[in-house]
Image 1 (cartoon, rainbow, N blue to C red):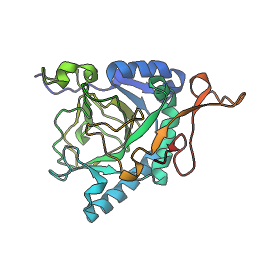
Image 2: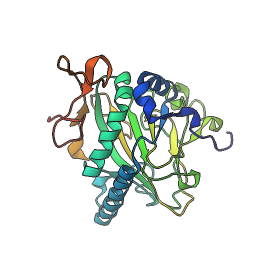
Image 3: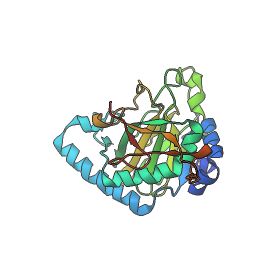
Image 4: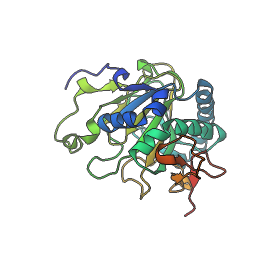
Amino acid sequence: MSAVATSSLDGFSVDAAALVDNPRQVAGAFRRDGLVKVKRILPADVAEAVCKRVHEELASRRAEGDSTYFGDVYGYEDTGQRWDLKLRLSSEVKDALRILLESLQGVLESLRPSWQLTELAAMCTFPADPGQPVHADTSHVYDQQVVTVFVALHDIPAERGPTKMYPRSHLDGELHLGLKEVDESCAVLCTMECGDCVLMDSRLLHCGTANKSDLHRFLFYSSWMPPARRSRGSTNTLLPEYEDRLILVQEELQSGSHSGNGPHGLRWMFEAKVPPRLVTVMT
């Protein structure tokens, strides 16, 4: 196996404006590579507000000791340095989701017409976290595509434990079946600035790297899947009250009311008490 990768995400990066100007091109790159980095998608003040909320909720949930609020993603029950915190739809989280979905609308529409929320959480690591083994959140062999949106809530340099990803591994059946090893020379390190995000296909091989700094690392993330029964993989970090209840849909606009958002006069719809472009589905 080759040495650990030091490559950056520059070759997989776009500005937020490209999501509006060339959504199909961005979606095509995502299909091919399994990841896309978007620079400055979330304003710094919005990211900082979510970061503060995560700090408060993590401290509260850890004090309570209720595992209901945590996903088991390589660390919760092990060293205590990695916490996968399930988030509520607080005002800070709603604001962030609204901005993200407005920016990502064209790309998501280019991939498929409707999506269901399957994860809403923050991945939190602390100094001395050893990192994760290489893994995929869902299986290339058994599972449907899930799109995960990771957002940096502060700057994440190499020493702060950024995620390492393996472009195009999401479609490599031999890798997923364990018939060959990952090529470390092809990996990229997801260093980011506050407000940057990375879209990742859930089948992509990746891992959190060791946090060698004296600072925490917080990533806000949401995952979206085709409306259906939820995946059998580890992509399940969602509070029970949101399961199978939040979806993105498209609806034909009234004649003459097309706002220019989305192809063919389609737009995301929403109802009250949830972020714009989210629809509550009572089951």
